[in-house]
Image (cartoon, rainbow, N blue to C red; front, side):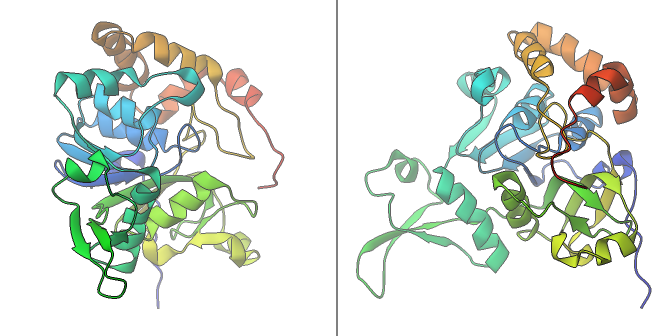
Length: 299
C-alpha cells in the first residue's frame, strides 16, 4: 500500500483550520509550545476559535492578542516566572473572552476522555467547588457502585490539535527524545484525543532513520494529517534538549503586551508584518538562535 506524503507548508497546514473550531495546542506552560503554528493562525486571521488546554501560556496570550479566540477552557494562562499573561487578563476582565475554568488534573483528564471516546470523565473531588457550580456542562450524578456523589466532566473534544516536536518524516511519523518530560507527555495525550493533528518539527529526517529507533515514534503517521519542518518552531519557548527559552524575547513580549497599542505594534513587527516563519527567524538572526542551542540529548 502506497504511503501518503503529509509534508507541507505552515500556510497550507493552518489553512485547513476553519473559523469557529475547537483547537488544542501542545506543550506545557512555557515549554515546547507550537509558536510558529500559533503565529500562522494569527497571520491568517482565523476567528472565533475555542482553545481547550491544560496549562496554557504565551501561545494562548498571543492568540488572544491577535483576535483569534472567542473562548478558552483551561486551568491556567500565564507566563510563569515572566509574570501575567496580560492579553488574557484584559480580555477576561473586559468580557471579550469567554473563560471556562477546570482544575489542572481534570483539564488533562478531559483529553483522556476524548482519547478513550468517553462521553464524560468521572470526577470525585469537585464537592464545594465553584468550578462545578459555575459550569452547567459539569453534571453531578450518583455512582452506581459506591453510591457516592460524583461529577461528569465533558471531554475536551478538540477539532484539531497542533503540536511541535523534535523529529518527523515526510509521512507524518513523529519522534520524541527518549527522555520525555511533561510537555512531551502532554503532546502525546493531546494527539490521541483527535483525528486531525498538525505537527511542526525541528527537522524532517528519512523514514529509515526513524525505523532504526521505532520506540521513539510516539505519534505514528496514521494520526497526523499535516507535518511541517519548522526550525525553532517553539521559539521563544524551549524544546528540552535542543534549545533553551529565549528570556530576552519573553521580556520583550511582556513589555509589549502592557497595553493594546504597544502589543499591536509588536504583533505587526513580529507576526503580521512578516511573510512567514523564515522571515521571523531572519529577524532574530542566526547568532542569537544558535546561542540558545542546548544539545544535551542527541537528535
